[in-house]
Amino acid sequence: MLGLNRLPGISAEAEALPDGVHIRLQIAPGARFENPIHLCFGVVPAEGVQRILTDFDIGAGAEVEFMAHCTFPNATKVQHIMEGQIHVGPGATMRYKETHYHGESGGVEVLPKAQVTVDEDGKYFTEFNLSRGRVGRMVFDYGVDVAARGLAELTAKALGYGDDEIIVRETIRLNGEYARGLAKSRIAVRDHAHSDVYGTTEGHAPFARGHVDCIEIVRGRAIATAVPIVKVTDDRAMVTHEAAIGAVGKKELETLMARGLDEETAVDVIVRGMLGE
Amino acid sequence: MKNHEIMLEVKDLQLARDKRAILRGLNLTVQRGSVHVVLGLNGSGKSTLAYTLMGCGGYTPDAGAITLDGVDLTKMSITERAQQGLTLAWQEPARFEGLTVARYLSLGMKAPDMTRVRQALEAVALNPATYLSRYVDESLSGGERKRIELAAVYAMQPKLAILDEPDSGIDALSLDDIAALIHRMAEEGTTVLLISHRDEVVAMADAASLICEGRIVDSGDPAWVCDRYTHCCEPCDRRELVEEEVAYVTNPRRVTVPGCPRPRTTSRQSCAPTKNPAATRSFSSPAKSPA
Ligand SMILES: Nc1ncnc2c1ncn2[C@@H]1O[C@H](COP(=O)(O)OP(=O)(O)OP(=O)(O)O)[C@@H](O)[C@H]1O
Ligand SMILES: [Mg+2]
Image 1 (spheres, rainbow over the protein chains, first blue to last red):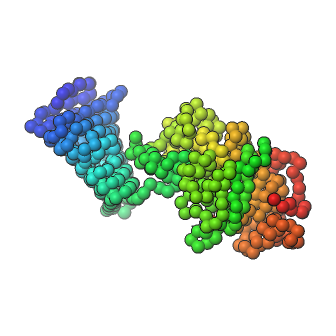
Image 2: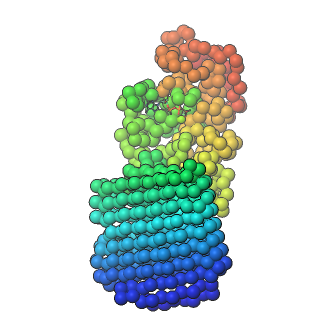
């Protein structure tokens, strides 16, 4: 660990592990921050294991935004393990955006895993983006439990090529009345890359509303699968899903070609837009 | 019309989709620098014509030829046609997740320039400060999306712009706004092929064609074509009448009975005044050969 800036409203502890770090972070109830809190992770050597354990506790009514950057420029054999326990207190809002910067070797294994609890009226938004450099292998595994009137939005975006492998598991359980959830994924694969997306949303309480929204764009000999799972155990809950897998939409493509772009460039513009670049 | 060179020439265009003939020997000539309106009822083949001209997938003609400024486009890809100076504003434009309006408008410009991007948005009555950073996605209303499509076409400064029903849809541009935009396009040397089922658009036209069942059945003076459209056209599935109509238009002396068979008993709203006030021929006048 290289540094830790302290701010009022945050209490942070970091404990070094043999292969990483354990971060405990508490946001005081009602705290607000002018700027996002930056977290920076990286492995500069070509080989190694990096384990990051996080416990985030967002106090009641607090509002906080995190921006995490993960850099593995030289990786030929790097494992990046992230295990998070996240608690969003009553009425609190947490936004977390993680962006990865990888090299071109494909030698990274990224294993982000989180268990999130969103209390009554809490809001949790997360976006994970791995579209710069080769993915290598990634298993994204997030599970969220949402209490009454709470909201959870999970977004995973990734661009795979070479023989990259992308696995996304997003599970949202809507346990309280009027809880809402969105499990969104945007994946593009080409060459021999593989992607498998499992988006699960469960509605267990009256008036819970959930949606699974998956788009995977496939080019070349890449393979993509999507398994949206929707489960409802309360007859007043509703969960919907949509999954679109295939080439770039014909109309989108032809529209850009009608502006003079060649097909390859047009596909690139569409994919990069979808991945938020 | 500034001069009388031919910009677009479409000869005997034929296209079937799912074994159904949709364009059935369509002929059309558009003069350089003109605003040429193609009028036709719903389902008459207007959008099919637009997609075929643009070279969209599934719209490769079975016969016929398309030339733009003397260059044969018939076998060219969409990109090549666009590079020749042709573009299309879709009737229902596509959406792009994560693509900003600013970027979208710049994409078609040879030398991207923010001043022009702003001008293009202003030309379709959208405030650049509000819209430049918006995404061209589901968050835009149908009308906003259509305006942005027209702005993108304008920003591109094409030789020939095909506008497929720019006036349709909730919150679409008003006819006055469309007229102003087309005027600006014409000033910059863009020839406009304006496709519509609304007869009011002839007010901004230099020439017009009437499309019926995948054929141009009349072409020429906007008031004349509009008059036929408003007084004669009603949805019908009697293709043999179109054959007569075409024969009549192509050679009025050969066929003595006007092909348009069922004058409407209830009169439709009359056409808006056209650009050319002298053009007030009525339908009962003998048709003029388009040649
Ligand atoms: N794939 C297809 N298979 C069969 N018929 C088709 C196909 N695509 C279009 N058509 C038919 O071709 C005809 C012309 O369609 P087109 O969309 O060109 O009409 P349009 O004049 O643009 O109508 P509108 O005013 O409603 O936009 C319609 O009758 C339509 O149903
Ligand atoms: Mg149409």
